[in-house]
Amino acid sequence: MEIFVLVFVVFAVAILFMGIKSVPQGYEFTVERFGKYTHTMRPGLNFIIPFADMIGARMNMMENVLDVPSQEVITKDNALIEVDGVVFYQVLDAAKAAYEVRDMERAILNLTTTNIRTVMGSMDLDELLSERDQINARLLSIVDDATAPWGVKVTRIEIKDITPPRDLVDSMARQMKAEREKRAVILEAEGDRQSAILRAEGEKQSAILEAEGRKEAAFRDAEARERQAAAEAQATRDVSQAIAGGNVQAVNYFVAQEYVKTLGKFANSPNQKILFLPVEASNVIGALGGVAEIAKEAFGKDKAA
Image (cartoon, rainbow, N blue to C red; front, side):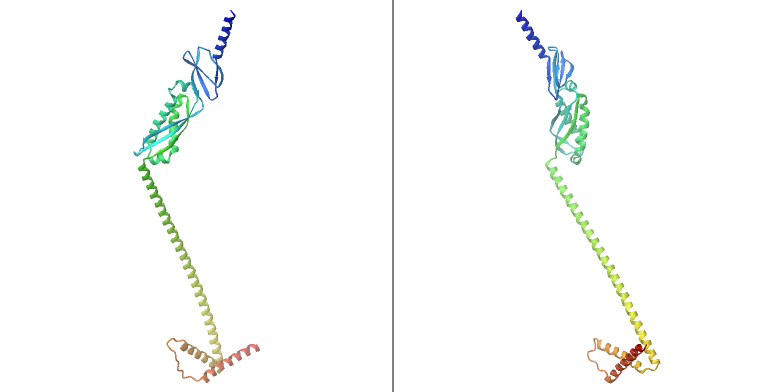
């Protein structure tokens, strides 16, 4: 009897322990009763009915990553390229992920692969190389909508490498080199143009300043000639008044002045080196003496005044 009781107690304890289940953090377990889904166990300590309930699927609820293997894609302009990528996803509903799709990871991978061909096959090669963010956004939208009934959230899809054929890469390199050389020629021509403009502008300013200088010089020359003419006119009036007053010395001054001017012109003539002048030195000296007398009279009048 005691042995029977002991066996019963041990069996009861074993059954009790069979009904206690611990779920680790980041996971959820589905529970099936006689093969039918009943509920989902959350992280922590859970209880089930031994022999009637059993663990169905152990689902990882953390964000996971899938590598998309390299595949060949033909673009819209018939360029053959190789593409690979990664997919980030997270299970939001353990029951749907376990019972709505078979082999969830393989389904996500195949769905991503086929849509990569669809999306990238509808674009030109230049668009693929320059609009990778747009490709990722389109793929994410399509795959996320398709996996929503499975209780899965696709968080990111990233295209890692886009590898064009070698001959196409060489052609693109030559095209890039030609484009850079073209830009260099354009920049050089633009520099020459700006240099020519600045040089012309400098010449223009120089011509303007030179013209203004000539204008100022001509104005000053005219002013000097005007003053000289005024002085000569005044001198002529003074001599005329002196002559009218009967001053013989004024006449001598006037004659001597013109005489000296004429001699200066002969002396400065480039074609005449030797002058034969039928003049008397005493006349010239007398004329100069008359000039001196006129100056004395003029200074004497000034002092008297």
